[in-house]
Image (cartoon, rainbow, N blue to C red):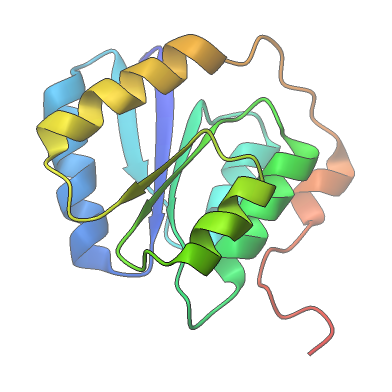
Length: 147
């Protein structure tokens, strides 16, 4: 079993797959790099304690990824979040800073530069214990609350 579980959330399936395959190759067999099918699927993995690092690309046209980051930072603060975004902007940087993400990286980035960042985050912030509560798995991060 891999020692590290990494989940990628990106609304661009091709970008997610490239990042997943590249990181998996560069990081090796001690890492399991997976693409979550949606922010809700990523949240379910985080809520059940199966994630050591969450890599998110927030979309400026939707709130689901930002809601995911907020939920993880609120309910699972031991899980570091790396924002890897093609939508870099001062507003997004400020919002992610408010959520206390581990790192914020603008695309494009060479995966050979990203791999050491992932290593540094995991070695600095690996969670010791994941506490799981049944109410956490039911929380939706669809970003559509109140709309």
